[in-house]
View (spheres, rainbow, N blue to C red):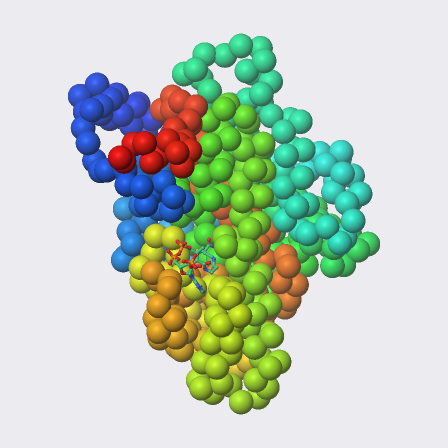
Length: 436
Ligand code: FAM
């Protein structure tokens, strides 16, 4: 069985050649205009970045190397005894563009489990943080500290050729992904169940099977399966979103993957991005409290208008690129529809009913370009139902997941020799001069 590194080694020369050809034969080809609205509008719509693992179509949603979410759910290997995609098979697809065999997936699971323990100084560091510090801040601190053991940084100091960067990057990226469950679970227990010891990592389990066990949910098969699906689906969403882009930007300075991904996590921690999944639950519970047991469409509509009229955004709705319901939202809804016990859950039903009412209200409100739910609208309520109720923690789970795509791109950026990212900025005066 070929390892992930061996498979990548085979794939990289072809991509390098493809890029070399583009550079030498088409460097001056024009693929779009830069408009003033792009510059003052957060660069929406500007095609200005290379990103290998996935491409987001505004109408159809995400495809990972051409595979849609339903395709992935059909072809990517799951855990023994499970049905959902696991992080390892998604990571393999993102990195190599190929669907891994069952044996390759298991081999990667074992490799990650063997690398999964935290260095003792990081455990101590995380244990010393106040439980009142937001879990995302703690995760970012822990990930940054792991750079103590960066093999890329150590090799760079000794002196390595540019063509070798990617192999050290890959080692760091796999080490980081392997350690995320122990780090993220330690934060969870420190904050919500102080004093609970963490079990050792089980070398026979997949990454997220271990994560669930470390969190204390090892016996909860439904939650473990949901976490697997959730983490696979959130793995990558092309390159322009704030967290992925941050990892790419920081990585372009040849910062190691720990520092690059730590920076990405702090972008993910913003309420317009990854923190939205925490915000959705907070907002839906506030709605439930206000409207009580009468969860009619009419009452939900009133509450939506109240939120909008107070000048706040409706969390879980809208998107920078998507213009249709998010296929990740649909996949998570399908997960719920297939499980009768979830039909009984009041929070899941409230989230579902809200998604039936909100698009029309947002359309009438007339501001958002996309009135449909994004993945955050529904991702948290299932966690809540299955017993992971601390929603301030939810973005950490997103953070464990997004490493799959952001770190994949770091490996590719170094394999393709991409340069330091450095767009040109303009002042308002300079912009005016250009258009008059
Ligand atoms: N509720 C109310 N107003 C909204 C809205 C929402 N859900 N989504 C967009 N708008 C407003 C937006 O604030 C803007 O208003 P102003 O002109 O007054 O500034 C206007 O509609 C046009 O915005 P847009 O072009 O449609 O969206 P953007 O590309 O600027 O922003 C989001 C995209 C995701 C930041 C925005 O839709 C939003 O704030 N949504 C709520 C927060 C959320 O769910 N974020 C998670 C996104 C998710 F995919 C992720 O990253 N995990």
